Image (cartoon, rainbow, N blue to C red):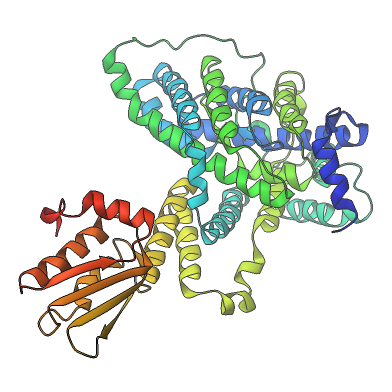
Length: 500
């Protein structure tokens, strides 16, 4: 074991002051939070436009989500704010019924997330295959890059050298110093250049007006009736599921990147609490923001302080420094996100040497996940479709693992069929065809010592085998059942005649 490992374990087990209280750590966390806050502003405004609401609604949501999740969440250093996926879910409701119903949906969606978190929905993450996770990461990188393309179309020519210059700064500056995050220096340098040279380029201010005051809490202006709940319930459920899916997948990604563990249950409940608070403050709701989380983690942030700082500085930048922030060129933020997209993509997963070793099924799942996410622009849908594809491929693969071999007694009076493998709905479908009903002797033994019964389909298949032999006046004896299989067989055998 490396020498540094025991120190990590000891530090984790021994209670003490939080890591972010150390000056070096605090500096990294605060500066990273500042970069994230700057990147959040145009994104939150864009998502507000998608949702069909005022830009302040998205900015308020990003502020309250980040601050609350920094305290209630289970994954330190992860950024939660207003997101495109949530905006797409609530846009039809906001457009047709107005802000009051949108806010009510956000609050109800938060309550659903708290309930799902308490019920342990986070444990379902164990059923997400690694190939889906790789596809998720690669699709995320592609979406981040694609989101920057519109910012590079129909713009003055000077934007392109500005983007290239910002990328060069962020690539080469860390080789000289890492005291201040390279993205922050890049943003400051490009802003100073464009303002000083009076360059007419798209800026943050072109995306929308920044708020000039803090949000005020209040209840949504909607009738508290059954009709209202019936109207918003489908949107709230979709809101809750999409938000949890993206947040839990992002938390798992950050776990892998930082080699740390986080509480997915606490994160699920924390997302719900953050959305309830966001709704009460008039925000559009949100979830984990993957691009900004990658910025935060790549800048070295590891604690809750960076998330809290990002939320607080977002409001400070809007309210106190709004006129200056409005002059930040979009080229600087585009460059930051392009670099994040390239750093996020798992290039090793598409290397020829890797693809040669991977089973075809794994590659198929990864490609399907990427294709669905890119086509729908919805990470949650891609993860669900990718996981279902992986399940189907796995089921087809293990369906052939149940084998039946026959051994006839020398005197020809008894035949023993040895069944090996896992018996479930996919593998048991062919079980009935593995027996020679016409020519077998009158005494048949089915030995399940090396098999396991997983579901009712397998019991029904065994019942069908017994029925076919009984129709020919032959008896069947099933032996070798393990405890769990015997219990399931005893409970269901003879009760499923209508199912086969």
